[in-house]
Image 1 (cartoon, rainbow, N blue to C red):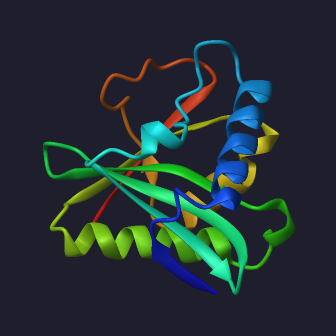
Image 2 (tube, rainbow, N blue to C red; image 1 turned 90 degrees about the vertical axis):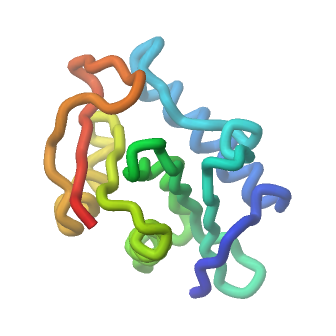
Length: 151
């Protein structure tokens, strides 16, 4: 498995992100989906990463750099065919390394609740993320969780 920057222009990435957005909208209350589409991820403040096994896209994730020296983990998604292979951990490790190299001091994220998000909650807990107040312009609801970890 290789995690590398970029990949937004690859058709497999577009398909994975479209499936991600569809799942988020299908399993989330209206107004509580903060997942980004391709254009939302193609901004100067976001570093986007993809994980590959040869020509097979395993997953993706992103890091948004915020003005206060923190970073926000975005768009973590593993291809269903690649689950159980450590893809999410590899991408998160890459994001953490990139954030440290950029001099960021803390990572933040917003995620949902419910069965669909259980694996993500376990991943973030294993990696030192703990509950925190809402970040940025996010609205706290019974559906979402906000997590942070120092770097």
